[in-house]
Amino acid sequence: MVFSPPIVPEAADQRIVLHRIPWAHYEAQVAVRGEARVPRVFYLEGAMELMSPSEDHEKLRFYLGRLLEVYALENGIDFSGYGSWTLKSGPNEAGAEPDECYIVGPDPKKSVPDLAIEVVWTSGGLDKLEIYRRLGVREVWFWIDGVIEVHVLGAQGYAHAQRSALFPGLDLDLLVTFLDQPIASRAIRAYRDALRKPATKPKPRRRR
Image (cartoon, rainbow, N blue to C red; front, side):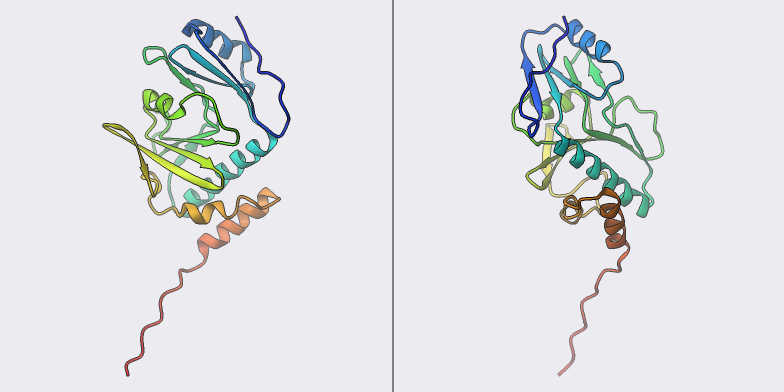
């Protein structure tokens, strides 16, 4: 059985959550949709979420990914981007398609990304952290109301962190200030210039 998301106002993400869905039906939904980016499909223990992102959601997703890539390039960090990679684990009854995801480091042949990024534009839906925990994603970022929340996976599950473990030098507060630029190329150039600007050193105190 294949489902389609409901029609809702364009300003919001289009989302529907269906329950008591067998794993085989989830896999059929993903297969029927094929290579299209929408709807993005999430699955957790018999519940399936179908989400079609709004224009604003997609803009933020794109900006976040490109700005992060600028930071990595400027700091010599190896990465590979995989967009909305379909991540699935039948034994763990979990599936996800992040807004953006990355493998960080020189080895691009991992079975799951190191980082998943989610734009929370409209509330509701499945527990994404639990899904990513079951999939074994090392780090998850949520953009919520202009702030990026970082969650790092440990032995007891995800822990909220002030900084990224994958990009420990990254100032997320600085990065988000470039998300409101109306043109992506200008945001990218402005952020690159900010990263290249030498840090201002405190002036030494004069001796009396």
